[in-house]
Image (cartoon, rainbow, N blue to C red; front, top):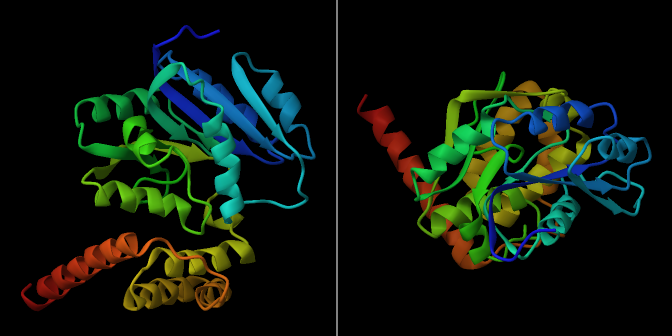
Length: 277
């Protein structure tokens, strides 16, 4: 039992559904981190395989079991609700410095948490940071492997919003509140499943809905869909289908306006660099 007012460095939330094949390696790597103070919660999202048994075979892991709804939440706001159940389980008597959201097939190098925590400790204006996944080159912190400053997240409710684009929302909201976000490009992790190979029709539809919900400008949205079409015409079609859906719940207008302001600024910079290079 935690004592009142205890301070903990990191809490890690892992959503998992039918992950018996992968989650053991993920937990092994997480328990082998060279930082000791890490409270780990796995939210077992109605798994029909042996995910629960695998998690229970590890010491010091908090397990939350959710009733099986019959389908995968990946790519939908339902996944936000799954992660939120883990966030709600955080012990209120403990003051966590940072919270990490981790995919159940994401394998971290042993120095992953320590390097990001050190970076955040020395840069108090950074709210969210992640490393890179091998083979990718993300310019913003990823959804899996992101470590979030808890003071920032608590200031907006310590929950993901139950809307499409909830992971991106957290990044933009941090910037709206004056924080920076960062990626450590030399900190490389692995996933047991190649990211894009796990994408389904529903994933692309949700991406399209996310663009509209968040308030991305039309030019950017068209460009994103166009780039996807070069490699995956079907995926681009599904993104467009999602983007033009009528059942999208939008984020608050001040947030959407802030995102448009950022994008127009980047667009102006791009045009200037193109004209005067």
